Length: 321
Image (cartoon, rainbow, N blue to C red):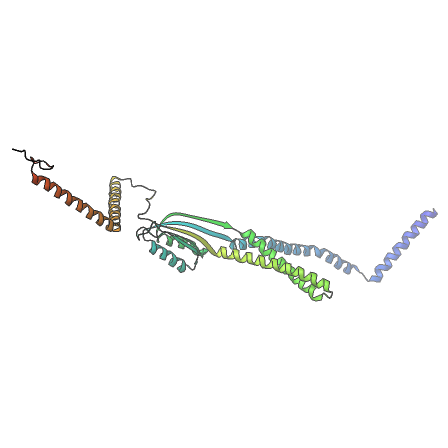
């Protein structure tokens, strides 16, 4: 019983203490209701926050798409091409190619020529090689205009995408530049000679890497902006036949007649070149031949004048009477 009475008294004492705390804080029913409402109100705030958070998340999700579009627009692609041409007019074609390169905004990086020209009295057909740089944006127009300088027998285009390598190099460069700034900041506060020497050594190494990466980026930019085009020009007497052959009878007859006329023309040109190139020797041999013919004819005339009954040897002595 004593324990039960003690427990009841302890409970009563706790109730009195709680009532006193409530009275001291001045909390009434209305205040409690307001606090309850304010406690309930945050239920709306999280919804607003959730909406704002959703907007933020949506912006974050759209950012990679924007970056992807920017990356696509900033692709680094190197475009190159090779061409082989035949020409009947070698000098005009070479001049036309050089003029075309200048008109397209490019320049000739390397050129070489071989041969002296058969038509000019040389020992072989002439040929030329060009390595030119033209703007990549006008590579298609340049290729089309190049076909007007001669007969294009072979052409090839090839590309090399260096986007990843370019941006990785650029990121590495930015990291080194930040490292350079930190080293400079630390160097400005260094007081001991050993620290200064160590920092300057590290700074020189970082700057060397920065210059190397900057040179790499400049070279890549140049290769992306200007395409490299290799051009080979061969002088010929006639263009190589096309891949497609005429099918109709009239076309076949016309093609065969054209080829025969070209053969006759080449034979006449070759004879004229041989005759004019060896006219002195021909004149000497002609003179020798004329002399031989004249001597032979004189000898034949002498034999004919002696008669058929006369011996050709010495006259025999008359017999003694």
